[in-house]
Length: 291
Image (tube, rainbow, N blue to C red; front, side, top):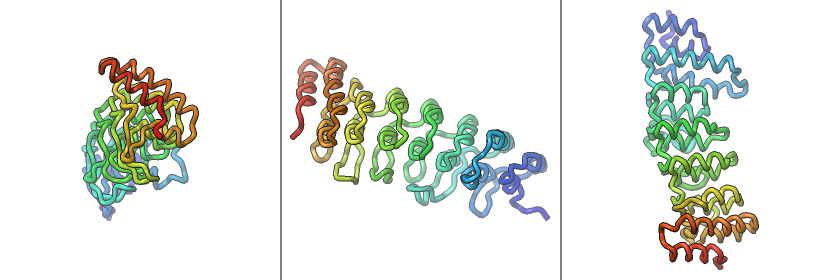
């Protein structure tokens, strides 16, 4: 007697021949096992289960072929289940979100190419983009694909990630050790709100914007990208009344202070549509240390 979960087991073993045989025999490609996993779920989490034995290129290609076999046979690429994934505990999530959690970029590409909903949010309010940018080794190609497919770049997350809540993808990116200028530019190109504030719980500042973050983290390249946006509020204050320049001074970063001062003049020029008086006040305020 065959196991009722034989298709799941065949997927776990990457047995393409058996998978094809079972599908041809009418196996239910959306059947769930005791963990509420469909065969696609098993394929997605397999990379995580074998994390200490990295997949070869051949195995990744095999996973892609199996996923496409299952999808052609009717596997639901938007299937949801309730799981505990990191900060998103007990949430109803899509299979694409799970692929992001497991950092399975191979399967994410297959799912997106086959119609997975990149706009879906979990029952707790997180998006796939939030999860991708939370992971250690994100792929900027995946980020760009999600954005091109319509993922909301300004969606905010309700739960705490990196000690704060209410931020956008830009807040997450700036907090990440692997953040790059290329990623910041990409998010800006897709219209991320450069003035959006989050709600921080560490160390003492609250409601900071991306420019505050860049100054806190002492990165002049990020400061330049953000401070030269036409609509940036270069004198935005957080809940404690601090401007970005305040944090540049407090962190004793001469390079960030210099960059911010240079960019404030350029920002004033870019903001000319707001009027000369506004531009003048921007220059003066940014040139004054907020003590």
